Image 1 (tube, rainbow, N blue to C red):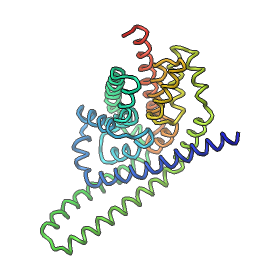
Image 2: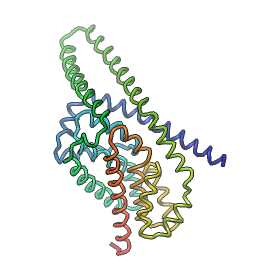
Image 3: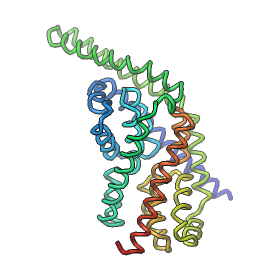
Image 4: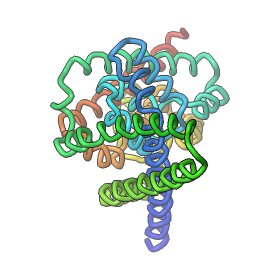
Length: 325
């Protein structure tokens, strides 16, 4: 029992440090990008056009983040004026598709399945995010986050305009003014970092609770349990795998090796893919962190969406294998 508790503690520390470092680093980078490129971000993503959804999904596919570490960038997108539907497209794709995952999928399951996986994720997320954009985002966003969004957006515009003006002044000014500008830049970086730390302190309790739950479940749900129950229920194992995946906090890169070992024990490929999608796309720690941004109604929709993707994809894979498609 003591060894199990020590293992859980190690898992908790690992998750906590990993997410904390990722959150601070990504939030700081996002803050810098918002300050320097807020107008470009709005121009390329904020328009509620079909192309913006595709760009957001490709942005998600290029960022190698887990489900929890997508949240700082998601928050930055919403605060910089990117539409709700486009931001949701990024939120769903980011943890499920990235260069590392694609490479591991191709090596582990082959090119055909990997391409079908990417196409399925993109098509479903596109339809879902486009549909949810028809609703008023205020119905889904927390009131506190809406206030933060309203207070933050103008500041980024002002900073961006100020930087443009400063650039013109530097071109026609003395070296002394240029040095003043450099000191202002350093001060701006410091202010941004302090703001990120302030945001981190706000979300710290959510990280502790989320990582604690993830570590406990990870420690007390052995692989043998998954093997036994996923083998026994055949097609229903896809549904069971989807729900088990949501309860765990595991990066998709870590789920793929687990999935291969489960397949060696007789678990179907559909159940493994269902487990991969639900575990990578949604987890209890992520939901706890998302609670700071979204209301419960969106979280329920989000969970349902990820489970639906996982189950449908898993069932299609098993049917395809059965019918030798």
